[in-house]
Every structure is written in structure tokens, then in C-alpha cells.
Image (tube, rainbow, N blue to C red; front, side):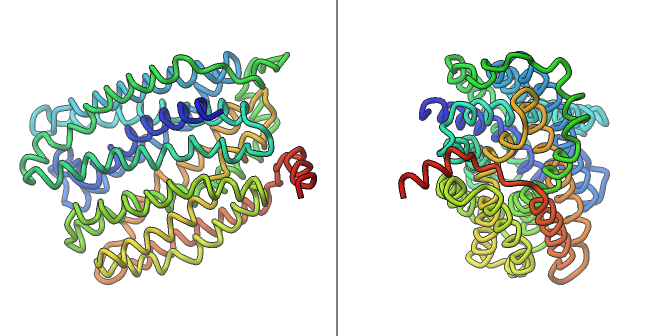
Amino acid sequence: MLRLATASLAGTAIEFYDFFVYGTAAALVLGPLFFPTFSPVAGMLAAFATFGVGFVARPLGSVLFGHIGDRRGRRPVLVASLLLTGTATVAVGCVPTYDSIGVAAPVLLLTLRFLQGLGLGGEWGGAVLLTAEHAPAERRALWSSFPQIGPAVGFLLANGVMLVLSATLSDAQFASWGWRVPFWAAGALALAGLWLRSSLAESPQFLGIDNHARMPLAEVVRGHWRLVLLTAGALATGYAVFYAVTTWSLAYATERLGVDRTVMLACIMAAVVVKGALTPVAALLGDRFGRRPMCLVGCAASALWMFPMVGLLATGEPLLMFFGFLMAMLAFITMFAVIAAYLPELYEPRVRCTGAAVGYNLGGVLGGALTPIVATAAAQGDGTPWGVAAYLTGIALLSLGCFALLPETRPVRAVAAEATTG
């Protein structure tokens, strides 16, 4: 289990590195380079719109790779999705700017971002299911949380590279070629991930299915449409909180408050480090107390914390901003540490790869794609952007209602084992 979980963690880290490095670049440099005829605010909105395209592509990727995962196995999904995302990311680093090729530059950027999202849409389902379906029932949330640490590691890698480049290069050098380096590095990371995944065994639950679904998406839509919509709504707040902290706040603080980008990256990264470190702890609590209670607590905490977080961000003071981000990340991981066990348990094995991945990635569209765009628009004008806080609080309340309508899935074997031991 440790070897399998570590390989899943490494793969998700690499794929999310590819995805996050684009978000950081969008917040810092893509607007002026690819949309120079726009005003600064409009250019940032356009850059965030290309960022959002990746989320729109993710449900399509979950359908495509979910079909493969439910028909051919979880393992092929891991290889194909990593190869697609890594190739698209390297290509982003090679796209000429608007000054070189005109309107073709943002079109190419948009296309490659779409391919990134397509690959990532398949990655999560394959990595999580391969781990969850190997794990013992009483520790399924713990082992399944390893792929959930991957996004934190990927984010830290992406922003760590950006932080080093930002601190060592002049603004002109960073805008000219420095921002491309993290995209080129994705090629080496993808090769490392493919090597790690080459020896993984197929999921025993998949091998035990006698009658594989012929059209998994059709079965999910016909028999589980309500579950898909509820899980998408439930997960929206996690995406919204995460990208409000890691993407929108970075752009807002550097552009509107004049905070140095190195300081902002350091504040955000420090909060994400704590979030990643505490993921297994929250997962253990999910094995002990159940998946649904953890999700309800995380949603409620998010709803209560969004106004204080935005207020602390508006001060521009590093320590206060870090505290605001940290508490938001703790609320986020209270939910998302157990999601990798919760979603697969909600779906029957024959359509699990499609159902869980589609619900997860639709939540990304609702919460992740729209948040940087809506928040940037809502933060116009002077003063503290309370409209952003209201928007995030509203999403948290929506997710709270969706989680309240979902059942608990903690395995009976885990409850029986706990009763036996004490």
C-alpha cells in the first residue's frame, strides 16, 4: 500500500504541478504578454478565462478517461492522462507571445490549456481509485488521502520554481523567458511519473467485476444523475476556497495592494505546506468519525471564515494574510482529505471511475473555473472587496446543503473493527 500510495501521490503531484503553474503564470504575466491590447484589468480577466478553460475541459476528460477506466482498467488511465498533460504543459512554455504571432498566440494558449484540463480530468479518478480499491476498508480514507496530498506538492513545486525565478530575475527577464522555465520542467517531471507508474498493479476490485459497463457515462446519467449533481455542488466550495487563496489573492495583492509577488508566493506556499502536512491527520479522522461529518464541518468553517480571510488579505500585511490563508486551507482540507474515499464509495464499482471523476470535476467547473473571474470582477473599486467574501460564503452554504443530502459511506467493516478494538 505504501508503494502504491506513494506512486499515486507522485503522479498527482506532477499533473497538478502542470495545472497550477499555469494559474500562477496567469496571475503574474500572461495578461500583458498574450492580451496586450486589453486594459490591465481586462487582460487579467482574459488570462483567468484561459485558466478557466482547463476546468471546463476536466469533466470532458473525466468522461473520456472514465470510459477507459471502467472498461479497460484504472492503470491505463494513469499513463495516458499523465502523458497528455505533460506534453501540453511543455508546449505552453513554447508558445510565442502576441507581439510575435498576433491573435494566434492566445488561441494556442487556449487550446493547450484545454488539453491540460482534459488530461487532469482523467488523472484524479485513476489515481484515487487505484489507491482506494487496494486499501483496507478501515483505513481507506488514510491511504486514499495520499493522492490528495499530490495537489499540495504540485502547487509547492510550481510556485517554488516561480518564487526562485521571481526572486533572482529582473521583471524584464521574468516576462521575457523566466515564466517559461516551469513549463519546460514539466517534461522531465512527466517522464519521472511515467517511470513510477509503469510497475503498478491493476485494482483488484476492477479485476473482480464480471460484467463491465458498455457505456459507463450512459449508466451514470441514467442511474446516478442526482448523485453527480449533489457531489458537484458539494465540492464546489473546496475549489472556490483553494483558488481564491492560490490564484485570485495572488493577482489581487500584487496588482491592487502593491505587495511584492515574492512575499505573496511565500505566504500562500506556507499555508499550503501546513495543509499538505495535515491531510493524513484529517483523513484518519474521516476513518474514525465518518466522511460526511468531516465534510459538513469543513463547509461550515469555510462559510464562517471567508469574510475574515478577505479582511486580513486587504491589510496587505504578510503575517495577517498568511493567517487568513492558513485557516482557509485548514477548512478546505477537512473536506478534501476524505473526498478520495468518499466519492468512490458513493458509486458502484462498474461505473465508479466515470461517476466519481465527473462529479469531482464538475465541482471544479462550479468552484474553480469561475472563482478567479468572478472575484476579479467583484473586487473592482476602492476598499475591502467584501463582494468576494459574500460570493465565497454563498458557495460554501450551497456545498453545505449538498453534503447534508448525501449519505454516509463509512464501511461497515471499519465500524465493526473499531467496535472490536475498543
